[in-house]
Length: 77
Image (cartoon, rainbow, N blue to C red; front, side):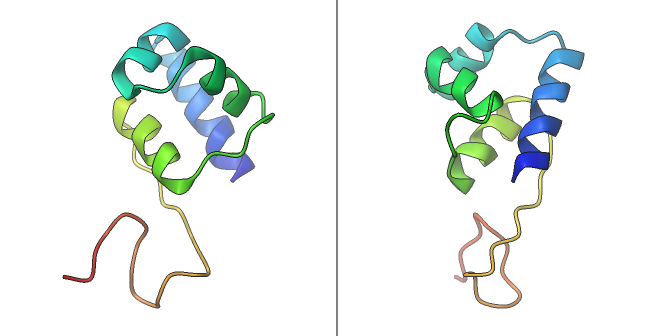
């Protein structure tokens, strides 16, 4: 997960998006986004997907708890 967070932070900086702008797009507070980027908080998969979507970035989250053949965020129906 650490690598994903670093990649998302780098994408945000490359796109010159501030934490304030990202906060507005995601509904996640600037304080929480900062904690996530500085690895002082562990985000859920849903939070990472929300950040990635706001950055127009695609991420693949591997979760050993998901049934085989399913990706995070996708329902079986």
